[in-house]
Image 1 (spheres, each protein chain N blue to C red):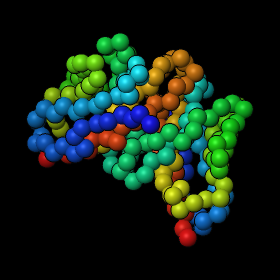
Image 2 (cartoon, each protein chain N blue to C red):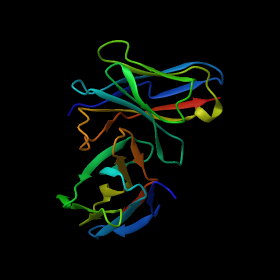
Image 3 (cartoon, each protein chain N blue to C red):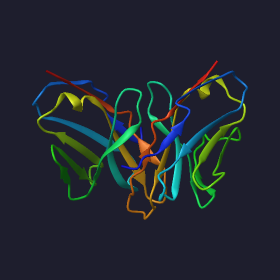
Length: 116
Length: 110
């Protein structure tokens, strides 16, 4: 079964440093997403991406965050100047199409980001 | 009021038991509904979509009550491998983002 893959599985970074989290969505999927889950809390939406632009973003996704699809397969999340509160599990997801009828999103196994 | 509300549990049940989880959502514009399961420190995995007429997938049955803004998941003949956190998830009309509940933890014991 095709799956979303994410690298690295764990990233440890000093506060103030930049990090890039990488994702390879399922190959025929057109919509890409980033979510995060702080330990012990619910999964929260960050951003969605379609046709090489952001289609929706949450209040969490402020100026320190950016997303990019640098080539035909990768989808990246960059955090410019990390803060302690950015420590979380970051999940990439993708969906085939958005018909308005609720295509499910399929999640990668996540990158655990630890900010020291 | 939380957008998606679930009893956090844990629900402790013996193998073979039937267990039901409930979920309520606050936004009447919610259009798509899902149950995901999440194992400890793992990614959410789609268990099933929830349709207006209710739907079944093996031992799992999902129901939707739009009038009461209520979703349920029934698990029959529980297995040890069903131990996980079950996430109620909705998508609001006009939005792509999924809105997650905090999840209900299920522990199935021998």
